[in-house]
Every structure is written in structure tokens, then in C-alpha cells.
Length: 281
Length: 310
Image (cartoon, rainbow over the protein chains, first blue to last red):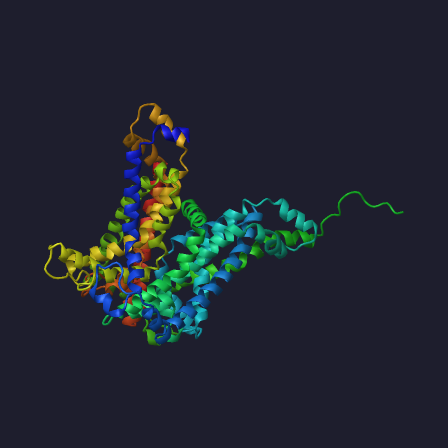
């Protein structure tokens, strides 16, 4: 701290903070604006552009949740993303344990490289063949097709991140449990899982959010309105010809809530974990 | 009392075999999923690219047509336009701008004053706002901000007397790419900033101090000491953002559907339109193969350059 005080100039500090926070506020403005607009009466949305605060109303949210199919989209997204996340993280946990605790089996290196290489895979080319495959299986418009897709897409990153975590957990834990007669699966879920909890939270959040945001697979694989997810449903509100801006605003805020809440509680940890994960690749 | 053997009991052959098999059993389920999901479709996509197959004829085998789909895709003048759009307007410009803006913002936010004044939480919360916004919401928000009649941008320009009537940014060829790029850069900038910030914070402060004592000024410290240390991180970000952006579908599709006309068509939207709007799965798959080959070539060149530098 003494070192900092030597080269801290109050004026330069103030300029830095004002500039930094100012730029960040400009960056955050589009979303803050959407939040403000979402609480305006429909008539005010189109007239009082620059007024920061007009009449406060929940009517846009009421219409969205009572007279639009949005609650169905919301439920679909929650179900699909939750199941996909739980399954992906469970499988990733077993796989990462296999890689972490067995350093020298034949093919380990090749398999790990393949796992990492899928991160660079152009996902968009998957969509035509996957549509064809799910079509042959009679699974177009079946939420299970979407769940399977999201599990697979998230699996490589989850394996990779969890592997990093498990490598830091001492093997003495496994050995002690094994002497007590625990099977490998028991060790993974009763011994390692409680210790690896912080890593599992990060990985689960990542898997959930990336499924929550996903658009192309949901657009192609879910054809009927009752199976649409939030992004595809929301996109329907600002279609080519008409835009129901009041619904778009409210739906945008609700669509962002899950990620916003998760990140608010875990911001410090997530930022360091995710950036570390990205940089390691 | 019987005397117990002192040495540990030898492992049964079955146990040894079980131990050898265990890693394979643990990683097998995930590997099967990845094979089914990545390797399978990749191979099938290549096979599909050599067939003529309508979306309505799925489940049957298509008519094998050799390189006809590729010939069509590669000679179609609109493909050339998509290729330029994807490479230059969608990818290169936004990647360069993201790196430049992200680097600048990260260097600014890395100043010690933010931690001394206990503003870390504020910085982290604000920088995360675009990132927590789903891409679809980002496009919706910007479509509203850029709206010709009611959008803040046009109202501000009119208020300042710069224009007489609102500009339909997404409907004009002169402004449409700028608008799409703004949406994309806005949503994807935080990833770059956060990643560079993390790298900056791992640089030991002793390095800067030593340089300062040797008489280096702030600018020299940033360009001669900090930037070289950031090189590996910048390399990874460049690779990842390039690949993600090149293959991105959602921004262009939701902003313009490739319009006005075909003006903002990119390879990903062209592929989707060919397969799922025109119902020509074979031709769509051919576009996918072309995309993959370009990305593969890019990755090879990229790794070659990185490898040579080391």
C-alpha cells in the first residue's frame, strides 16, 4: 500500500475513475434503457423518448405473463436448460474424474485433445445433419432433441473445466475412501463432489447460461409454438412485419433475469474462473 | 492362534483387469456422446453435400450428384458476396475492434485506483451487463435504440439538428453493417475485457516497479512490458472470437435476415436459408463444408504462425 501511495495522484485517479465508470455506464446503457422502458405505459414508450422516468406501470409484464405465450416459453426453457445442465455436469464429472485420476492409460492424450478440439468446432454445420438425424428418429419438435443437443454442446467445456478442478483435489481423499470399501462412483459423488463444489457451481452456471441463450438449435429443432424456448419466442415478438415493443421490452428483462441474478451473486468468482478457463484453452 | 500372513494379499487377475478398464469405462459415455454429436454429423454433413435431398425427402437416401452442389455454391455470385460479408464485415472488423476496444478498456480498468477506492464490484457489475444479456435481447435492445422514429439514436441526432428525419439504420446499405457490428461488439466485448483483465492482474507488480525505477514512463511500461506479456492471451482470444464470429448466425439473422435484399447475407444465414427455407438440404450441407474448410485453413495458418513465433 505504501508503494501505491507514492505514485497516486488524486487528479489522475479521479480522471481514471470518471472515465472508466463513465465508459462502463455507456456500455451498460442499452440494457438499463430496456429495463426503464419496460415499466412505461405503452403510449409513453413511443412519445417520451428522453424522459428518464415516466409513469411507472407493470402493465407490460401483466400482458406478457397473462395474454401471451411467453410463460410457456419460459417453462420450456427452464425445463430444457435445467435437465441439460444436470445431465451434462454429471457426465462431465465422471469423465473428468476418469481423466484426472488415471494419468497413463492408452489414448488419454488423444481423447483429451479431441475434447478440447470440439471447442473450435463450427457448431453451425451440425444443424443440417442433426435435423436429419432427429427427423429419422421422429424427434423433431420433441424437447428431448434439444436437451440432448445442449448436453453434447456443453460437455467438452464442462469436462475441461472440471478436470482442472479435480487435479487440485488431493488423491489421499480417494485412497482413504477406497480403503473404506467405497466404489469409484461412490467416491466421485460422495467424496469428490462435496469438495469440488465451487468448480461444479461455475461449470453448471456456464452450461445453463449457454443453453438459455441458444437460438439456432431451438429455432430449427422445435417447430411448434408450444415447444419454443425463450430466445426463439422472444424473437417472434419482433418479427419481420410487426413488433410489439411493449412485450419485447418486458420479455427482454425477464429473459435476462436468470443470468443477471446468477452473475450478481457469483460475479467475483465467475469472472476469475471463466477467464481462467478461457485462457487455458 | 493362527499366524496371519504378513504380506498384503496379492491382487486377483480380475481386479487388475478391472483397474485397467476403469478409466475407459469412466470416459466412455462422454466419448460416445461426442462421437454421436460431433464426429457423426460432420461425416454425415460431408456425405449430404454430395447429394440432392429435399427437406421433405428426409429419411430416404438422396440422389448422389457428385460435386454439383459445390459447383453451384461456388459459382453463385451471391456466395462471393456472403464470403466477403462473413470474412470482412462480420468477422475481421468486429474482431479487430473488439480487441482494440477491449485492450484499451482493460488497461484503463486495471488502474490500481479502482481497487484502492473499493470500486471493483462496480466495475465488475457494469462490465458484465452486456454479457448477461442474451444475444436475442441484445439485438432487440439495439433495434429499439436504432428505430427510425422512436429510437434514442435518431431522436438524439434530430435533437442536435444533425438530421431532419430518422435514419432506418437496418434498412439502408450504407448503415446496416455498422448497426449489426455495433450489436455484436456490444454483446461480445465483455468477454475480451474480462479475459485481458484477468491476464493483466496476473502480471506481478514488481515488473512495473522495476521498470519505473529504471526510468521508464507509463507508455513505455505498457508497450514494452505489459503488451508482450499479454501476447499469449491475445492469441487465444483472437482464435476463439474469430471462429465464434465466423460461424455466428444469430446477430445477422435477427437484425436483418440477410437483408436488405441479400446485402448482409453471411455464410451461416445462407446455409440456414438454403436448408430450411428453400428446403435444399444437400446444397445447405455444401455451404457448411465450405465454411468448415475455411475455418480449418484459418486454424492451420494460425497455429503455424504461433508455432513459428515460438
